[in-house]
Length: 111
Image (cartoon, rainbow, N blue to C red; front, side):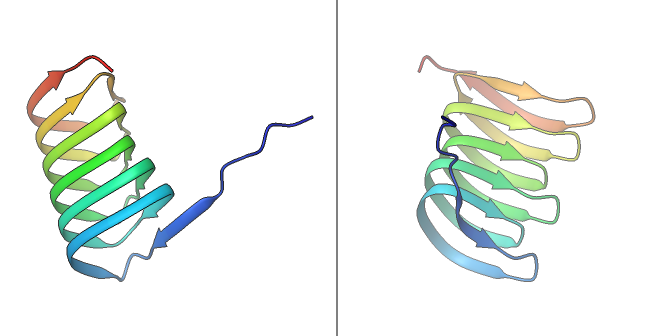
């Protein structure tokens, strides 16, 4: 028997802009622009066209776009090849793939 796969709960398109706060859970793919705060329980996938300015808290964060601000990842933070992070990271696991950019400070914390 195959294990149940998680399905995407939220999708934020590339032409969207939000100024304010997002509270969500599950799997969230964000391709648009956000200025403010994101509080997410689950996996947050920031797509290549996304531009985030502000504070982000998630269980797992996968960055393919641009993020400027403070990030707290409770389990894992990944910057993929096209990802760019300018700011501060708090995470127990922090992975930067070849081509990924990180400028800022990082504090590794226990889970």
